[in-house]
Amino acid sequence: MNIAIIPARIGSQRLLKKNIKSFFGKPIISYAIIQAKKSKLFDKILVSTDSIKIKKIAETFGAEVPYLRPKKLSNNKIHFNHSIKHMIRWLEKSEIAVTNVCCIYPTSPLLDSSFLTKGYNLLKINKSFVFSACKYRSPPQRGFFLKNKKVTLFDRKSYYKRSQDLTDIYHDAGQFYWGSKDNWLKDDKIFNKKSTIIEVPYLDFIDINYPSDWKIAENLFQLKNKD
Image (cartoon, rainbow, N blue to C red):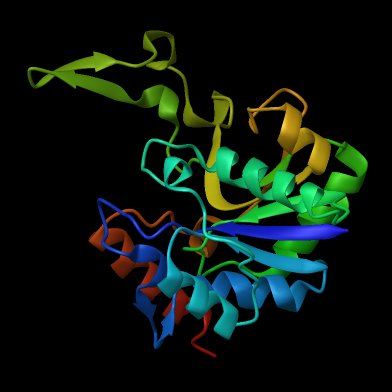
């Protein structure tokens, strides 16, 4: 059985209640639920939340919320892995068989179900975590730190190298994370040597943390759906 789990707590320090904030007339979490349903990959689409309001919204759009997440797993210091493991263990206690789990972030309005499908197909081959990622547009090796407004290069050896000679570096796109039930329960690190990625174009995702990110997400969504 394939399960989608969307972790969506009510608290958000940088962008208030961002998991249910209206995005073009619908709560933003609805987009993740809709794409999960559209993929036809999942036997159950579950939302892990500590909020009755989020529970009602999630259920309106077709997800299940079997319980409210404990407070100890709902603060901003808890990694989302813990809420996923908690849900998997709850399913096991309820004698619901689970084979694979895809964690989908609730603030993923640019997510396309085809990438979920690509991730699942790769999971069947890779047997470890598969997640969405994007190549840095500008080489991080050319980056620098600022201390007292003074520049310290991140990698001095790369200063004279051409961009095309630098190794490509990728970053998490913050959309979805596929893994087997056993991987989720035994492995705390999604980013490990056995993991692999589905590369997402840089215009097809945005990690929403600040009001400016929200505005970018709106612009990208309009661009993507202009036809």
